[in-house]
Image (cartoon, rainbow, N blue to C red; front, side, top):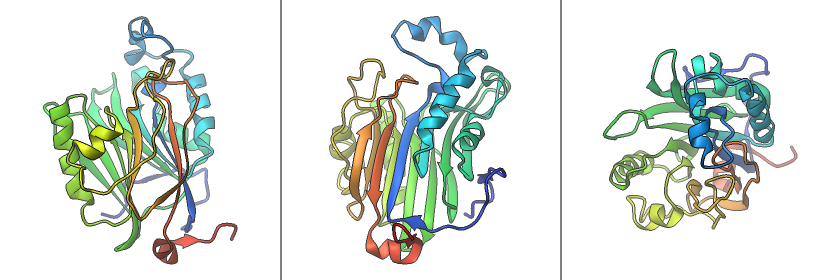
Length: 276
């Protein structure tokens, strides 16, 4: 479907611009702007999941400065504008902070004025279509945003998702995603996937998809990262130029950054040479 519901930040000029040869990607679970630094903060700061906190605006400012170095950003655990965020749509706010002209908020669990659990997409480039998908699960609340740059074979499909904690439910969600990406040659999966890369690539419905990634240090918990739960997985047609877990312990997850090189065939249709 066409991105009629893809929100545009009117503070930025809007025009169709080709993708660069090197695309800078970031995936970040921002925990609705709660600065968790120790395990006991899950208890002592749990009220911030329900009520506004005076320091949240400063946290969003820090996050915005991190995002500003990237072209496409996948956000998880974002609030869409409720009491706990001071009625601020955090996706739109971060788009403005980072000067992203294109943004989309996916509302996955609507608790009215108390919470608007969401994923978010920020982009410096206009997508050709965007789809909002609810992922299968015992309870509602998990979703995926499918965004395409270009059309047909010469297109780049980017998926932002936040997967379930349960192994069984996560497998059902990955099977659903596998079906959605099956006919696409150039694919990027980004998000908080709640398991490590080997499970995703070797012991889930993604096995045999030929997706690949780089070996990363831990992303969770941010103050003592021991588990790699956040990933950017790419198809064989895409190559990794640079990848790192950013030392930005703002949330309880660390952000994952990856610069990918787009293939010549795709660039012929949708890209401009670097430096043009």
